Length: 89
Image 1: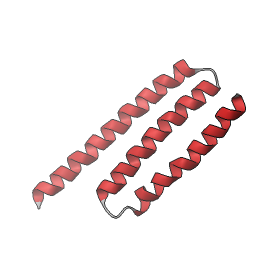
Image 2: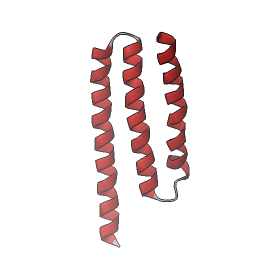
Image 3: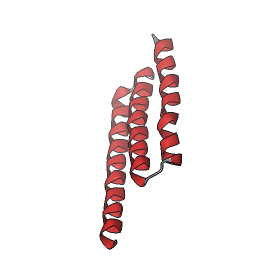
């Protein structure tokens, strides 16, 4: 069973690189924001999976929650920045 979770973790790590392309080469800022959100979500799942593999899910849930809050604050900050730019036009 441990091998299965290791394989899923490797697969999830590879899948994280798909929205990374959208972050780097996105034609608009909104595409980049969505890609960053997708990377954040997949990273949270990967952190929880690693916590389960190490049998310390309680500690990794706290780390994941902190990461989720930082991801949310980052999205709000970028949205406020976009709103401020849109008002100046």
